[in-house]
Image 1 (spheres, rainbow, N blue to C red):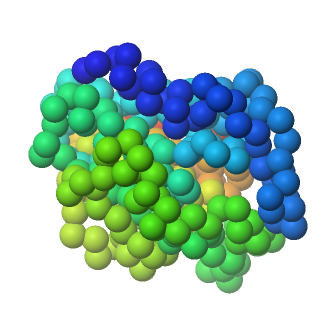
Image 2: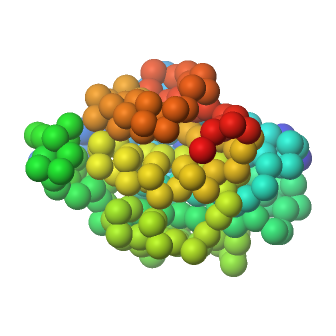
Length: 252
């Protein structure tokens, strides 16, 4: 792999080169921004105005490194992210495949492409009071994400878009096995729907990345799923909110 290429991809996806500002995180203040803060962008604590990911440099580096491990360790399967925003993490996944000359793996890009759903506290009490659906800054349509892939010359038939709410689209998705899954659904419902649908298709030795471990509902969903399925693999910390584990050979 050309490490210089993927390092540059990370810098561009996070836009640490030109240092664009951050959106004001308030649903009523669309279009307002604050100056670029390099430390916030490093650890993904801001919502960039221009960058193609809000994951930050450390979580993007984690994606790059684990996709490379999938290749180096010959873990069978494709790659998927559930909750993609502007597509940056998936663009990076596709870029790592390209840097390695890999043509037999796909990147699945799963999102509503219309922001987050209102909470369903009757079925998912942990999401009671969640307001993320009010943030239209999170609603990036599929055409824009496709355009972002194309800007890197990485939009091709190895990229598959899966549009809709995870509970509707993922159970019937004809895909798998997966070598790496990355969950960025924020809410309990989104996280649980993703885990239930795609974790059983994660290959032994594959990687599960969770973007929102610092948020109570997401962390609860992860803990509930792992407990129910007897998953004891260590969760490795990426930064203040990201975490990952490797699926052991004995996992379900």
